[in-house]
Image (tube, rainbow, N blue to C red; front, side, top):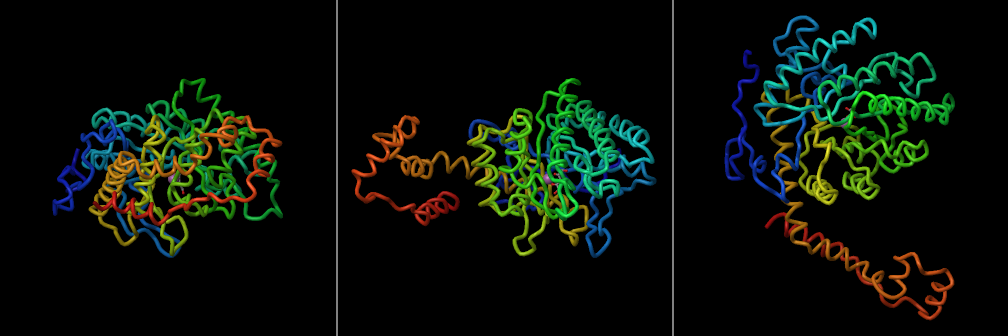
Length: 437
Ligand code: XUL
Ligand code: CO
């Protein structure tokens, strides 16, 4: 196969290397916190941003060539597959993620689209075998086509609901065929613009029903992986139903789907919801629904989903801290739902983007492990709640204290005289000391 990227295989050379085509922090076989970095991080390539997205935005067409020498609809998609696997091979990325419409062109009917998908799936199967790559998760694009203008599972048009169901069924079958360990629901247009035209209850009922049908079908065809919901508060719709982890968690419980789903948490979606990335990860972790990550970052001055390659080390440290505390990834991993800037239009830029993201998370993992090993911050938090370890506090923690006992205790206190400082600045100094020593 002709080489598409005139690039070497990217290797670890350490922080002192001046070679920009090397990893400074990502050393795949080095053991950090009990596993190799490769096992801890489970990097994945996002098909759509890397191989399809040419940089078009609201004000202009794409700037990069993402045909990779292909000629004609199917051929372009085949070349994208070839390019994707060469890229994964050269960057040492083990996994990829796709939407159905990323890998093959949509036909004039579902049957035609499915035929295209089957043809490309055969190519993907052989590339996966040749290069030793795996599918992290698959999904269906039920937001791009005009038929989904009012949503898919939440469309007021029952025919659209049926169309989405058929499309998702096929995407799940493909995921199973390619050995994927995850299937993602991201509700791109599952929301509303105005309540003047929206029956929110009916839409949520329908969306839950579609999820139930898909979960049951997946289990019946032998899908053993995780189903994920990827929360996002807005964009493209004004209000998306899967607003954030807490909202989704409530939805899952309300519809009896909580045992079937975990979260795929995206950094830029967290900030759009007014949360930190770590907040979303923590809410998922303490509710036992942490699953996978879409790694990227937004731009606080722009305020929309800019999907940039992640380079903020505080965020990657806090993220990897949560991942380590959750016991690491099982079926999930770190998918770079990230794209190079429109002005970074050359093929080389894809390498620089992925190297930046992989090195940032490798550094995040190293420093999160150091933070946990250092133990001062965890110890501080533990001690901050020491009053729940004895006396009335222990009774509260054991759920034994009655309201009458609490009242009696409070009356005897007179006033609270023993609050202690939260020491935020002290802790921030400790964190910087660990990160930059
Ligand atoms: C959109 C987004 C999606 C999902 C998969 O913001 O993140 O690409 O990751 O549909
Ligand atoms: Co995403």
